[in-house]
Length: 64
Image (cartoon, rainbow, N blue to C red; front, side):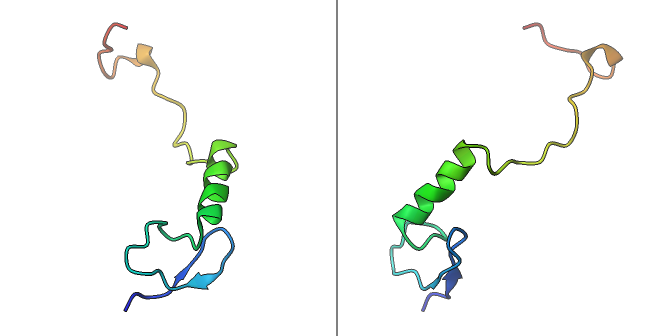
């Protein structure tokens, strides 16, 4: 038996059927809503800070 999952979009608890290909989402609609949030940049991966300055001499830079 598969353990119950909580849909990250609508918070509905569901038990995925065998062969369930929607990940943690309960419906294709919830999956698309989540994708839309990523594409509209509602969700973002946190930035660890500014990129290193290429002129600081720490690493040789490849020519572009």
